[in-house]
Image (cartoon, rainbow, N blue to C red; front, top):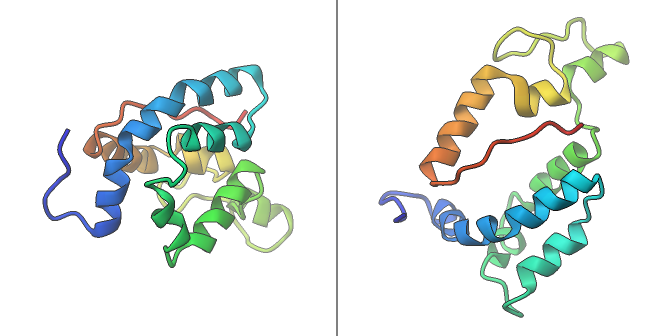
Length: 137
């Protein structure tokens, strides 16, 4: 699939990495099925063919890098400040998702919210990736 005309520079970089994503998807799924995911294996697979990665500019020279890494780390450790967690600590007075008004949790936010799922499906479709996200559990 060709890269869309009119994409921002970062989207062009992301779209160029589709092949890399497809190549590591089976490794990712295998580790998840065993219940033992290790980022080291994914990193090694990404670096396998090349000592200088084509995707490094996305992370190393990107102004949103720290925010992205923090968000990913929080999500992988099931620690993002979702409304159910904030409610539990008495910081807010409701747990309703702002997109659909159902209870917001990590699984809801990343996988179950129909509004967000629709957006992510459109993004995946736009970059020509066939992927069905699975829950954290």
